[in-house]
Image (cartoon, rainbow, N blue to C red; front, side, top):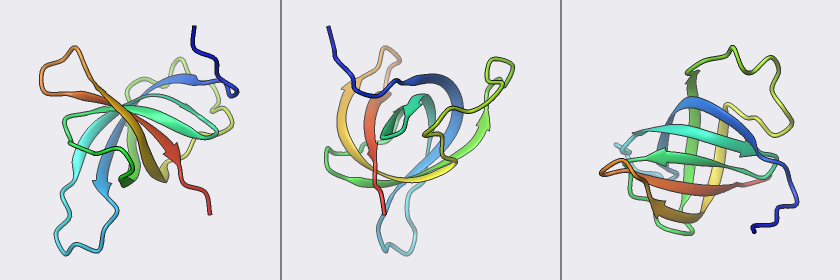
Amino acid sequence: MEKRNIKRHAIEASTVCSHFTASINPSIYDGKMLNYCEDGMCIESSAEFKKGAIVLIKVKALFSNAGYPRFMKGFRTVSLAEIKWSKPSHDAGKTFYGMSVVKF
């Protein structure tokens, strides 16, 4: 059984993700946020991010806000995050990414 210090909150939100670099034409990837907490989030995407990469995450829209009467602590619409882990999804060509929010 996995132990967590911080409660995760389930959500379905449309996101865009990109590597946080000084590239002139950065690639932007669509994703789906599955959950979040104060320190991070889980996103499903077809992008290829390596562990340790810093990515910029922007929430585009909630798929359904009926179940989300108020956002819990830790919800952000724009974040810099470090990739902590990744694993294949059940959907072909997609991967789950666990990200830790970079704090300034």
